[in-house]
Amino acid sequence: MLDGLDLGYDDDGDAAMRPGRHRRRKSGRGKSLFALVLVVVLLGVLGGGGYLGYHALRGFLVAPDYSGSGHGSVQVQIKTGDGLSDMANALYNKDVVKSAKAFVDASNKNPNATAIQPGWYKLHKQMKASLAVTALLDLKNRIATKVTIPEGLTMNATLSRLSKGLKLPLSDFQKAAKDPAALGIDKGWFDRDDHKQAAKSAEGFLYPDTYLFDPGTSAKDALSEMVSHFMKAAADSGLDKPKGIAPYEALIVASLAQAEAINADMPKVTRVVYNRLGDTDQPWLQKLQFDSTTNYWLDLKGKGAKDSSQLTYAELHDKNNPYSTHTHAGLPPGPIDNPGATAMKAAAHPADGKWLYFVRIDKSGKSAFADNYDQQKANEEKARENGAAG
Image (cartoon, rainbow, N blue to C red; front, top):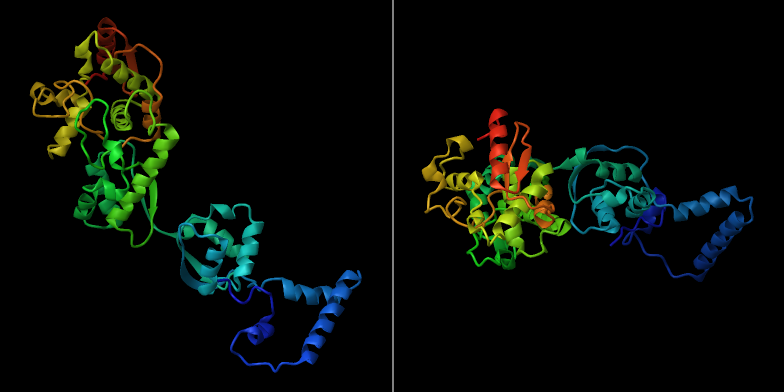
């Protein structure tokens, strides 16, 4: 409910108009006198020469407002879904602004006011309303813990970074990650067209981004927010509705591209994956032979990832490793990292081409692509010459 100051009375009038101060006796004379004064004021304004009348009327119409930048400090929460009146009341209740209407009016005059974000803010008491609007738009006043999650981190690495950033036990995040549904991941996301069993975890759904977590954020809250960002990114990129493949499988492909290529090459890498998976004339090509999937398994087992040159034949061809794409045809059980927007878009919209192979060709990370094995061998030789071969 808006406060009782919105009619714009001065301090004395304000106090007199607050409910519960005193009772007036019913009197028609008093009403007539008030009406007469109001008519005189209006006539003064409308008559064109009513300077005094204008200022008297302005006192009735302008919302009370503080005049300066304020003093002291106070914390105010802007909640998700709050409208201007909700924000105004929150500020008024903490004595940041003199009236809710003053804040609403100031917000309507500021075209950037719609960009005010939910969260906790440190503000001054008794601020001019327009300055309060400006303060809410300045993220320096936001009370939050900033945590940046880079693209391509595994779930384990992501949980560890969140634990350190939010200063919460790692076990809290590990426990929360075991229940994807509670984080907002619908069970339909784990459907697969290739009929393989899905690795039902939060891996792949913890969207890489820079987050501002509010005070009191729990492990579950943090992971749920990341999943929410993922869902938006999936919709924006088309990953939630890819052509010819289930969304979960497209997410796995996105994670492979994130692990294997620089951004510029990702659409070609995802095309290589799709071409190999669909090549029934050369079924051996359906073994993708990505070292990154073996490394993911080693990381899951707590053994740590290795450089490709250090992976042994036994590790790459371990039949007990469900993520070995050297031994098992098709996609692995689940994503091997948390891909970013570029990789997600590449999985949903791969480049056009007949490529079946690729190799990192130089130390910048750029890849060379081939549609036959002879070309691939030539590219591998060039990679060795450039010192880029793993």
